[in-house]
Amino acid sequence: MEKKSGFVALIGRPNVGKSTLMNTLIGQKIAITSDKPQTTRNKIQTVYTDERGQIVFEDTPGIHKARTKLGEYMVGVVRHTLKDVDIILWIVEASTFIGQSDMQIAENLKSLEKPVVLAINKTDKLKSKEAVLEIIEKYSKLLEFTEIIPLSALKANNTDRLLDILYKHLPEGPLYYDEDTLTDQPLRQLAAELIREKALRYLSDEIPHGIAVEIVKMKNRTKTLVDVEADIICERESHKAIIIGKAGSMLKKIATMARKDIENLMDISVNLKVWVKVRKDWRDSDIQMKNFGYNIKDL
Image 1 (tube, helix red, strand yellow):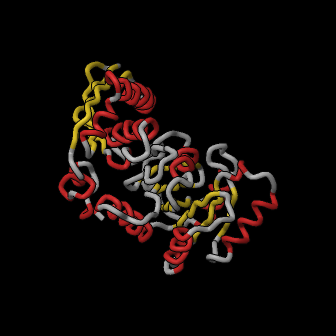
Image 2 (spheres, rainbow, N blue to C red):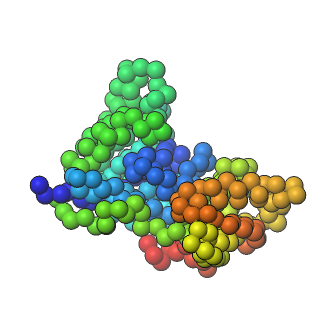
Image 3 (cartoon, rainbow, N blue to C red):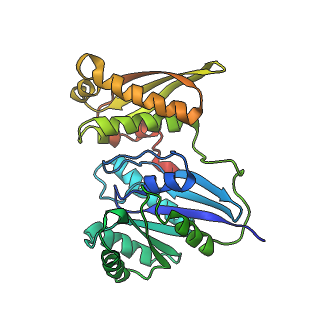
């Protein structure tokens, strides 16, 4: 039997569960998650392979109104990704409320001649099937979807059915990656993102939008131990003090929790050292953004 393969873009508003869904589908944590918007900044590719073929998932930043050059870069990532994929997987929350950003996404998708699958996420929070049907009816008026599927990424409810749907609409083709590949992201970038995730989780709302993480060193000391050194970059001296915390308590908490995830990812003991540095208004500097991996010219 000819195998199927192709690229699937995950799009949606910030915080609808795109990264959680992608992690659930491939069975390992690759994309970082948090309850804060604009967690994902770059396109992140993960690879799902089984006997039917291969699906390359592309997690994109949440679609939002850009207020900085970094914001413009993130919106550009989404637009660029949609041009090159085979299927668009639009993820929404299980709610009958359809906001302005959802309306804008629907308008943008109308001009793309590609299959669009609507995934209604977080349906485990609903109390009845009638509530799901009401949501489906509302969204069906926005766009003619190829398929609509209710699911819960967190509980892995109906995710197998989602894979069936995606394979159904993918073209026949070769495997783009080796069967044991889970992501195309380098370890340095994955480690940096895991540190940023912990900062997102433990810091107050306004600070995480203004931070980046740079891996300064990643080197094996022995076969069972790797040394990792990282800088957390922020925009204000006042933010630096908050990230470090009283007697270094916050920075220690971020580093300790990040180290555990990096060890799980790399399957090796990790000696992690983290510093905090200030780069004023880096999110509006093309040079600084490029240094941290957000290069507009790459789009």
